[in-house]
Image 1 (cartoon, rainbow, N blue to C red):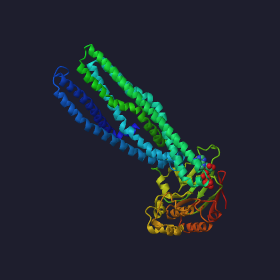
Image 2: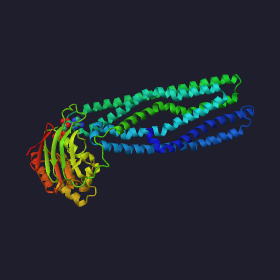
Image 3: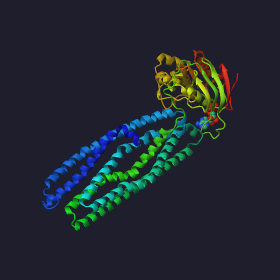
Image 4: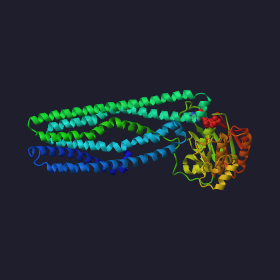
Length: 551
Ligand SMILES: Nc1ncnc2c1ncn2[C@@H]1O[C@H](COP(=O)(O)OP(=O)(O)OP(=O)(O)O)[C@@H](O)[C@H]1O
């Protein structure tokens, strides 16, 4: 965490300087004021000959305290917000690299918690941790020196008080608070995941009569989260009690010691009062540090979750500097093997040493039972997953050696589940071709038989779709996905069950239109539907990890 502050270390130094001077000004202002009051009432018999210079110094330092505190806050927040901006960008980049394979494992609600609440909590570390600690150390040291000059025993006693309240207490409370804070962050992530899942699956839950049970489960998760939060608050409350009590005991010990020292005659009473005022007022920065013992723990727990996402290894390493791809000259696999690392049955790969060639301009079909590995094979060809064995080349180059951006330009996927973004119908079609002309978009929509959908939506192509296209039927969503494929300029298009939600007539028309507009493109179509598979030039069956020609 601290490493991320390095680029702004000069800003942090300025914040620490402002904060330290500000607190010293406030302590010294009070000491000068105490000296001035004593001087005024004793008329020169005491600490000082004249009270006026002390009063002036007290006013000047009190006035300086304001701008210095403002400067400290300004600089600390400048550093915190710049660092949080960089962390957010880094987290989004990481999520892009982890998508889609690794992100599925983490749960959407958990990720939402990481990129919203967890990152937000890091602000406490960057804005309210390092500088209060430095300020507390410097002010404590300066005060110790002042007290040692006055009387070594009092200086030593004050130093021990500073150590106990600023170091020992936060250290003792930190471990248990971190544990409960992490439990709270995890409970919150789990609750968000459950909430999003129950919203996404509301139709199934209501349809299956499981809504009441899900509500109970959500209530349990909410209770778990509230219990975890109350543990954190309980810890934080007790920490405050200990800190306040220890502070009062420290005041009493140093006051009693000072009294005995003054009685012994080695220190005058006015000097003792001024020193004691300085000692009491020096506790403000120290108490902030003592509170960090509990206050910082939720931040550290959030940081653990943010950085565990940052440390996650993507299923595939993006290749930014790899080989450039020229024309598409086909895809070739020899002994291609894949097994899921998380699968209990690693010895039985999903794809087991298969070999095939996809020639440019061909239409290849793959059939196979549920769970045979068809979508997994497409993931390997798209490089969403890394194969565990064999060779896979695109245009004669090993797929992992190719620049990822080039690969994405060359390959388009129409996946089994169509995601509809909050955008117009036209914008949703043009997702893979943002600079497509209006005519091209309208033509792609017509080829995908979306004419009736355009007529039905109030704004036609300009109608804004929301909530993952909730106003479209599953078949209409699939037609939109096929329109994206029509518009795509990529020479290789993989279609994973593109017509599974369409009626037979529409399915036939769409496959016909796809093949008619092929124009040299290469199609890999995964399907269970005989009407679709009868149209392909080369048909393979995927079974028990093996790919065999079926025609
Ligand atoms: N993340 C994962 N971890 C472990 N196993 C997985 C994972 N994802 C998929 N599998 C397993 O891999 C196998 C192949 O899944 P895949 O989705 O490729 O099948 P499919 O042929 O496309 O099925 P369908 O026709 O139902 O779409 C299945 O047995 C599935 O349970």
